[in-house]
Structure formats: structure tokens, C-alpha cells
Image (cartoon, rainbow, N blue to C red):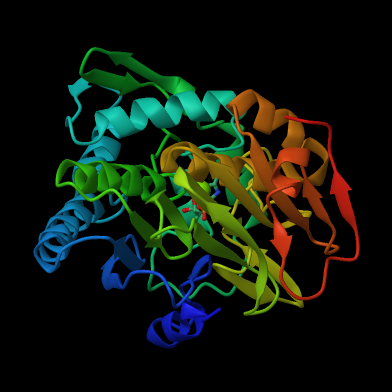
Length: 350
Ligand code: AMP
Ligand code: MG
């Protein structure tokens, strides 16, 4: 087995976490990279002509640029316009480029009991995790966190009527950082299909959706170990599935020996405790993306209940003590690469 992983890691050392592992004997792959949503988007196409590959790349480049600039919560964009108008409390027309995302995110947030909560943009900013360039080193003031949490920002506070929206809750600021990548990957896969590409992977910094196969074989996907650069486990994908992972290693700072990472518990205002990573396999990327964040926050004790509510069928959670939690269907697909985790807990079926 040739590990394309090693090659990809050279191209983008810290970014490609969930990786494609592939075999030499299959048809050649067309591969390219873009940059959007603050990460490398790695595109792999199989069974395409050079013309189709060129066309695909052109389309995906346009798509990702558009989505990146339209859904950016903090730079000038349709989403930041929405956020400023929400602050006024008055009713306004929402741009059609963001309304469907917000409505979909609201449903998923509700199904997660608010653990996936894209209305906590102001909290994310307070922690300094909103900007790619900010180099936060200090946890925010506890009173500032409490003041924000007391206002309970939630997408449930949006009053939507057709294409208009308003909210009376001034703490609502929409940040789709836990969701837009998944939604974007779905849009991109839809676009590839429209031009006749049916065997592909779009991998956004380790979060991917795969369609079709690689020749006669399923796509073979590696899941990164949350505490090393090694592959923790692998899984085969055939047909149409998304593999998404949320991890505490993606963005964090250390203060007085403690790790403060970017996945925040909307109930406390602090980084979610007890989890280091969660991997979800689901048909669409948007649901998988929202679910990894929600299940990360839910942690080892509550992930099963929330996964059920969100309609998720495959979960693997790595807890801070290194133990692994999976449902039986996930356990039957996962192959650990290298040393098996010390303790593996298999839950009742989902
Ligand atoms: P992900 O890697 O998909 O889990 O997304 C993490 C990003 O989503 C963070 O960098 C924040 O911008 C945002 N975020 C953090 N915590 C939450 C949460 N509980 N619900 C929704 N978005 C969150
Ligand atoms: Mg997510």
C-alpha cells in the first residue's frame, strides 16, 4: 500500500488530518489543491478525462472562493451583513446566499439540544478563535464569558418569516465555522456530479466527502490520531459518504499548563471538557460537520443520546484519557492502524 498521506503531509504539513490511503494498481488519480475556509481543500478525481479534471478544478475554485467570501462571519460578507442587521433588532431581508444555511443550521442545532450552536459568534470572538491571524494566549475574563452566556444566544431566537428575519436577542452572532465546510463540500460534490464526475474525494483539511470508487476498490480513508501525526484508524468508503472529525488539536493555546481549544461548550462558555476528537460518517457533509462539533461537546457520557437525536449512524469518540467510544456499526467498519487504543467502549446500537 502506498501512503499518499506522506506526500500530502509534505504539501500541507499541519492541515491534512483525515487522509486518503490508496493503492498503486488502480487507475491514475487527478489531484489538486485549493485554499478556502482557512484550510487546504484537496481534490482527488478518479476515472476522468484531463478535460473533465480541468473543468472540475475551475468550477471548484470558483465555488470555494464564493462560499468562503459569502459565509465569512467576520470579514465583509453576506453573513456579516446579516449579523450587523440582527444587531438592530429590526426586520430585514436576508441574502439568499446565506438563508438556507442558517435554516439548516438552526434545525441541526435544535436536534443537538443546542450543543452545536452557531449563534455563539461573540463567544468565539471573546476567546480569539474567530480570526486566522489572532494569536490568543490568555483565557478571557470570566465575567465577560458569564455576561454573554447569561444572554443565552441561540438560533432559536431568530424570528424568520419568508425571506425576512429579526431577533430581539443582541447576543446572537452567527458563526458557521463548525458547519460551513460540510455544507460547502456538499455543494461542491453536487457541482462535480453535474459535470459528469462520479468518482471523487473533496477533502477540506481532513474533513471529506467521497463519491464512487477508486477503480474497482472503495476509497480507503485514514483518520488522524488526535495526539500524534500518525493514522489512528482507517475506514473504507464506497458510494457516497462524508467522514468528518472535530479535534482539540486543530486550534488551541496553552495557559498555565492547561490546553484551551476552539470547541466551546455553549452551556458553560468554556472549551468542552473530556473529548479530544470525534469522527462521524454520514451521507451529507453538512450534517456530519454539525454532528462532530455537537458530539465533541456532548462528550463520552452524552454522545450516544445526541447522535440518536441527530440521526447519526456512525460515531467514534476519543476521550481525553485516550479511551475510544464507538457504536457497533462504526466498530465493524473501523480498522485501527498501529497500536489499538487501551480501552474501547462499544455502545448500544444507534
Ligand atoms: P469544528 O472543527 O467543525 O468542530 O468547528 C469548530 C469551530 O466552530 C470553532 O473554531 C468555532 O469557530 C466554532 N464553534 C466552536 N464551538 C462551537 C459550538 N459549540 N457550536 C457551533 N460552533 C462552534
Ligand atoms: Mg463541525
